[in-house]
Image 1 (cartoon, one colour):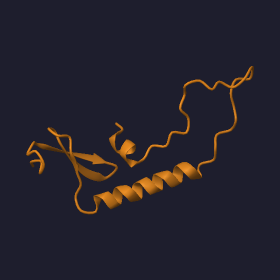
Image 2 (cartoon, one colour):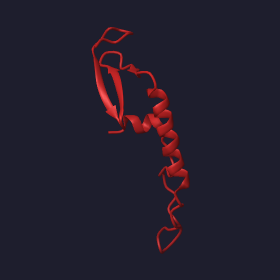
Image 3 (cartoon, helix red, strand yellow):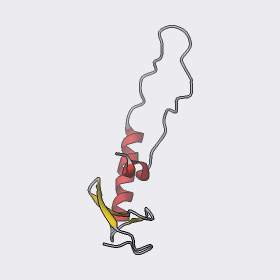
Length: 86
């Protein structure tokens, strides 16, 4: 299969049950009919699971003040982050 944009060779990936084609040359991602809607549904389900989960219990060190360093807590990843995580 060849890329419709640059005519490079395409590679197929299976991400959460969705077949994605990606060009090795321009790195474009191509979806078949209905796959974008399927990814959108999966993202909605993922977001609902994240928001419906109970918050973690308050914690921290038993001594001193809680550490608020350079850690990024609560970062929500959308379907694109989930899609390309390995």
